[in-house]
Image 1 (cartoon, rainbow, N blue to C red):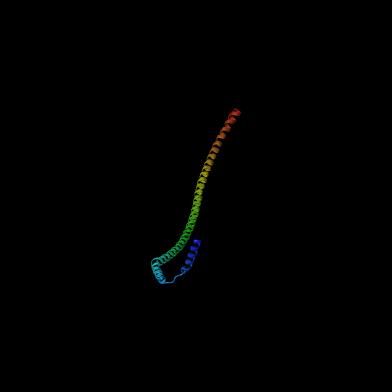
Image 2: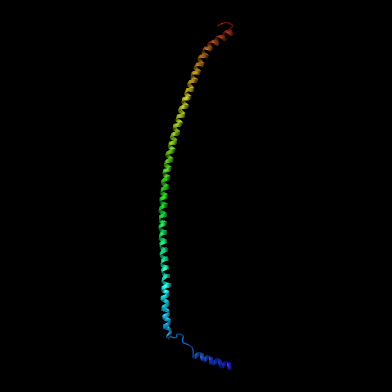
Length: 161
């Protein structure tokens, strides 16, 4: 019972002395002054440098993006120039190759013509020699044939013809 009486007295004492949730007195001005001073100090040494750093970073990123776009544009232009030069070089090489091939064919035809002429000349010369030799052989055979004919006739007849 003593305990319950003591708990009852304590509960009443606590209810009577409960402080207000917000106590407005002279410390509010001190707290406000501390807040203003801390705000000014933090603004000067923390917020302004942080915001400036963020702005500089954003500007640097934007500048880098602009430079990257310019570099991409320049790279595209260089690639287009390179492709154009390569196309011209290929066209030039193709025309030179065609010219060299036609020159080669012309030279080949010329050499083949010369070889044919030389071969035809040799053939004609050889035919001429053969014709001359055949004529000479025919004349010689004609002369010998008469002599041989007489000898054969003499031998067959057994007397001189």
